[in-house]
Amino acid sequence: MTHDFGLRFAQELCDRFGSPVGSWLASAEQVIPFFAIVVNALGTNNAALWFEAAPTAVRSVVTAEQNRVHHFGFAHHLAVKIDAHQELTLPVVAAFEATKALYEVTRRHAAVEVDVFFDCALRACSPDSGLPTSSPVAAAASV
Image (tube, rainbow, N blue to C red; front, side, top):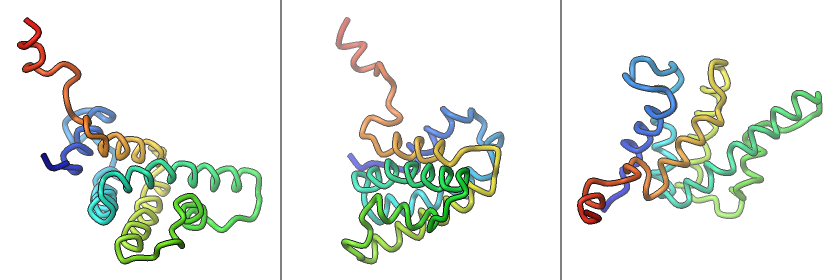
């Protein structure tokens, strides 16, 4: 079975923001392609590692800005967290640039924290994402 990240990510966003899709935040529609680039470039397992590291990089930026401390921005914090400089392949560069772009889009839309999108993307990378907690087949088998 293939992992359909796009569908699962949309399901996670529906769980978070509700349905219909037209009621979602404007930034949600803009970041979906960037998340898909990360997953397509790295695969779901490695993308999940990035989606775990990115909120930490975001918090580093926020903390530095609140404390009025010099810092090198989200891209630097992300690169440190994911060791992007260790293996600078084309997929890593594509994922890195897409992650920077989705961060920029979401940080300019104050209605939502970027962590919300990273959390939904991380859950969408999970093999059991989008699956009901009690499947009809499992329920029928237990009868």
